[in-house]
Length: 632
Image 1 (cartoon, rainbow, N blue to C red):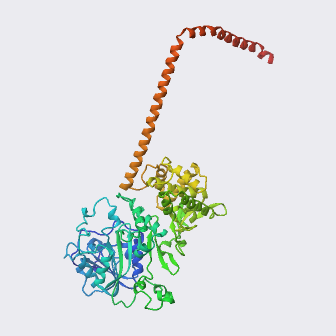
Image 2: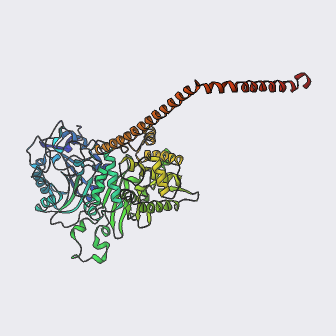
């Protein structure tokens, strides 16, 4: 600790001198949580940041006066330069007269308490933070879901935590803490706090890459955007560790069943203390946008406007962070004409369009393309999976044929697909009736691609997911991934061959390397892995016990088929060998008979005459041929 940081750190007692809570996994610019906090905190507000948070979150709150309440002294030293004041103690260490405009406890309340001080419990910590909130102030609180998706797919039970931070393990057995969202709203309401907004955090409470409004999850169960957002967030999570089952599949199924909010790993609740004279909004927000009564004169009557709707007016519906390391957050807001894109300002630094050509990446992101409405409709991948599971070949023919015709209609003057259409795969295309649209137009191909290559790449990705994921489908089970890609191309009305599919796999490796920020060695390794994909393999990058078991069952079926084929081949060879032995015995039997010997003597003169005629013919030809001396 330096002399400059010492005055900023208060040590009222209860500090933990040899412990650190700062998260090991940190998202670029604080991730969706930091983007949400920046919108909640007004300029010049006094903010209490209770518990350990990513240091990038403090950078996003540079427009406010931030006080950090931590239990770890090393963390306090690390954050002292970013905060106006750091209090290293438990919640009892807060001065009694301190009042704050916004209190943020986005790491939960368990991490606020210090083991060196008096334990207050979950409810006691909430009471202390509520007392520190001024009337009209906002509380941003995280509550982990004891029945969340992360616990359902975890290989270790929640009650068996053995790491150093597991001093206490929260669950439904602890009656002191709420176990669901309704109980949390009741606890907040009993303390004069009204929950204005609630976000479901995916894929993990500690590092959410997707924050989605729980009301939107309940209402828009067929939204292609929500489908892609949850699937993308949970797919990247499963690649980092072993799980019981695929969380991406489970999250999408929960969305379609209207239970994605209930199965969220955690919830972020924005609550407001009663007697609020004004609405807490984002820094520098336009009142005409923040207040729905001003934005729409038709709802200017105060009796018509819901107070909770006023608090949620400028909050996004979803905040999603996808792409390579360093990618910014994309927001979706609900406007008068539906959902609209709103890209984070921090992502536009440095001119995104020039970078891919300088680094020769196959794909890049242009945040400036995220303007206008979010395309409505269902995700094409989901519709195709549904058609395969129901063996609805007519629907598959209609969907794939329409998709191929739509791609062909987007070509440039050279007959190639450029920009977002070069990356318009089935997991980035939404369908409404017979209309197709690119869901996220910010991802673009650096160079135009041939239509057949784009179509083959998209169909290969779907075929690989279909076969390695173990999905039922109406085609023969002996097809490999390339063969099923050719079949899907035929269903779409295109004659794809295996060389085209091979070129599509190379394009997929280059594009995936760019989207995930892989270096040259990573791209080579990825290309090798993609070329070697077999139907009996588990999904690429997946370590799910359920999918590994399904892959084992497919391998067992394949081995059974190969064993049956080997047995049939052996039986065929055995029968042919027996027939050959019978023929050989017959030949030996006939060669020793009298008739065979008489016949052999009868044809002997003919053989001698034939050999003599050949010799005479050869001598005559040599005699008639001109000699070398005569030729000269």
